[in-house]
Length: 144
Image (cartoon, rainbow, N blue to C red; front, side, top):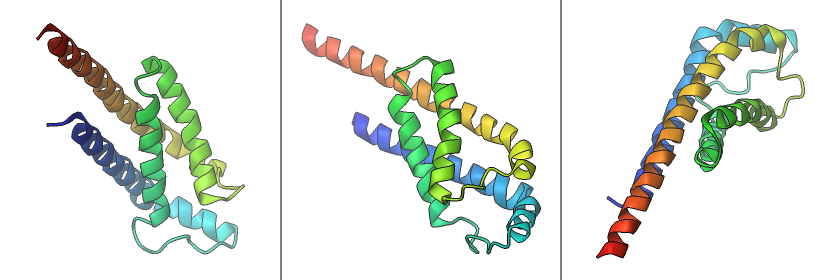
């Protein structure tokens, strides 16, 4: 298989992981907290379907961003950058300055951090494998 196919499959599968994790966290575990937040701020819930276009786009951009930086920095630095930028990306995606409500933020942060650890771990290992595979293939071409 070509390397770009592995990249596409990895990004799509991790995008599905992030989207499903977001759905599980926000629409199953903490749905009452989100509804209370929307009602207390006189807002209409942004979506009625379980997974919105915004969350799918957010997941895709988030995974592409992590995929881009995963091989360039150490695991810890990648994790830190990813975790911090995840909040900013989420804030800009939904466009609500009061989006980071403490009643929702505090209980959801550990799950977001766990999601980030899994995402960065998988993509970091893939990028290391990709680099090793590329070097081995390149060296094999030079020898022959």
